[in-house]
Length: 354
Image 1 (cartoon, rainbow, N blue to C red):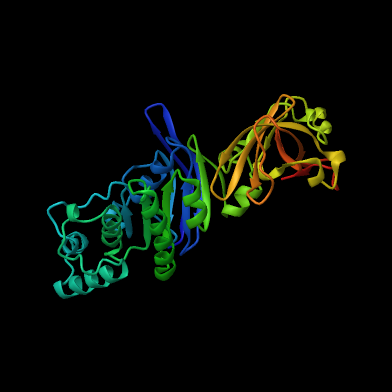
Image 2 (tube, rainbow, N blue to C red):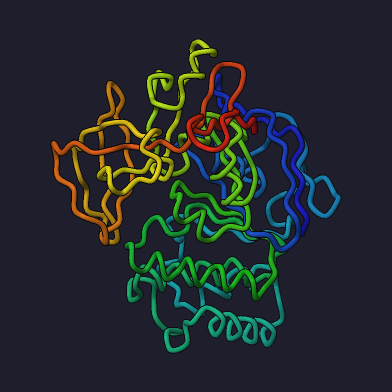
């Protein structure tokens, strides 16, 4: 199903939950709605499902405006965060419920339920009740039930939030594989960046009811279009006056401009680890955080505090140790513009607007 949203707006009282949002989704894509709590993600999902009515704007499925269609006529499947399974029904009963309501023939219901039990890896659990299943198994039943009526659009509201970390990671891979096999257009809400980056074809960043940016995980991370997106995706540090850092003196030409510096923009080490010492400056290690595969290092450079990564293969640094710091680039922003600036003491001294 191709989905198009034009000028979608929704208020709850005086609170603007969704503000003039526009986007389109190609058939078969898996889209992640990512953003802080209360940003409007679930409100968008519920309006697509027909569970909330927009104040203005159009929701278009397959070229047809569906604003006035009830949920059961929109060809959607909905997976809720809390599973919403019927406790008194078995796995089979839960999956078959929607088909029975739609009055499918009994033999077709039986075939479809068996098909979905196989697809979702629930063989052997057909006669069990929800309380006899693990969290991951209950979520698979919820997926199967949503898919049973053969929907054209699958909507998922934080589908893995109630599941422990290890099972959540397994289910992410399973969901991605299942969507690819079925070719069904899917939209899922999450506040977990890793989840969105790992699973989604494209991400939509939602903040305060606004669509900040839509694009592939790589594009959003590499080329953020707003200061909010730059600060929300990945780890970063805000530097109030980046012109105090060596190689960024030119930033003083834009009064009021701040910089966002990601860990991968910063290189640290002893003097003998650098080829271009003229671009480095002295810093001091403040804290080290062991991340399993690397160190996350906090370092003070003048009045600025930066964070960066350091390989476990390199010499271990210690709090209080004096080191050399090279900031390769920074994401600069002010009230009117945003751009990436490279360290002028390196190869490209000019800012690159994005």
